Length: 209
Image (cartoon, rainbow, N blue to C red; front, side, top):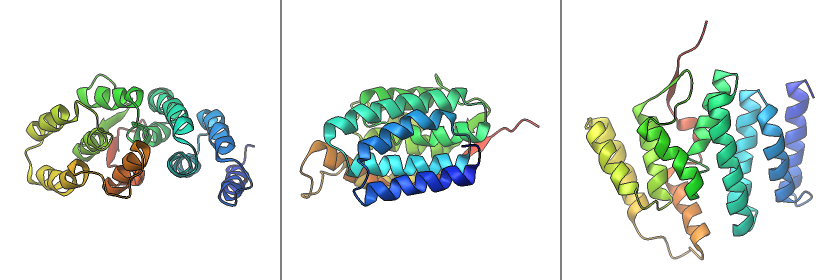
C-alpha cells in the first residue's frame, strides 16, 4: 500500500484483532518484523513499534519473547544506521534500549555509549546516554555499574545527578513480590523506569538541506 492512511488503518485493525484475541500476537510480531524495514513513515513506524513492545512483554511466552526480541534488536541496530531517512534512523535508535533485554541487544547499547556505533547525521544528547545506561541497569547487565560510573564522570552536572538519583532506587532495589519469573521482573523494572516511553528520548539530528 502506497497510501500511509490506508496502511495506518490496516495496522490499527491488526492490533485491534490482537487485543480482541482474533489474531495471534506472534502473527502480528512476525508481520511487523517483515514489514517494518520498508516502512518510511515515522508516525506509523513508531506506533507499530509501540505495539510490538506491548505484545512482546504481555502477550507471548518467554521463549517467543526472547527469540523475537533478539530479531527486533538486530533490526533496530541495522535500520538506525542504514535507513535512508534521518527521521527513521532516529525512530530506530529510540528502540535500541527497548530491545536490549538479551545480551545481543545490550551489545548495541554499549557500542553506542562507547562511540563504536553511531547514528549517521545524529548526535546523542546526555539524556539519551542516561537512558541507555538505565536500560543496562534495568536488564541486569553485569557491566552496568561500570557504565554507570563512567557516565557519572562524564556528566557531573546537576541535571545528570538529579536524573540518576531519581532512577537509581527504582532499578537497583529487589524486584516486587508480584514477580513470578525473570521475564516478569524485567518487564516490571523496564516499565518502572519508563523505557516504554520512547518519545521521551531527546536526540539532536543534523539535517541535510
